[in-house]
Image 1 (cartoon, rainbow, N blue to C red):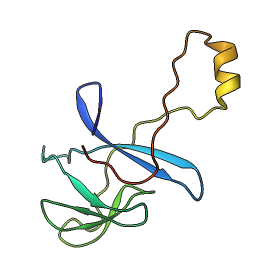
Image 2 (tube, helix red, strand yellow; image 1 turned 60 degrees about the horizontal axis):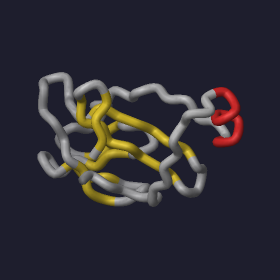
Image 3 (cartoon, rainbow, N blue to C red; image 1 turned 45 degrees about the vertical axis):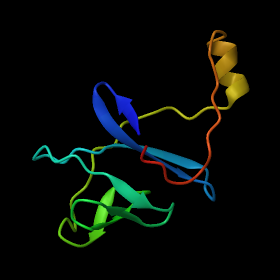
Length: 100
């Protein structure tokens, strides 16, 4: 689990496309979702709805059609980023789903 400006966030990493999406896990009504699943199919623990992790949209179940708010980010080559921001720390992660 990650936090962004006080919000709990879900980070989706697709190893095939190397794309990254960051979503706020809170619905407009204030419900905070927890997810389990894999890089192709997520299921929220509250309603059992199925979510597309690359779009942040529920595709099956009670929440079908609802979407999570995406947090914008910048993707860059580490060497290029370090040239601009020399005091940067880099972290490595494991692709897949983590909601800890």
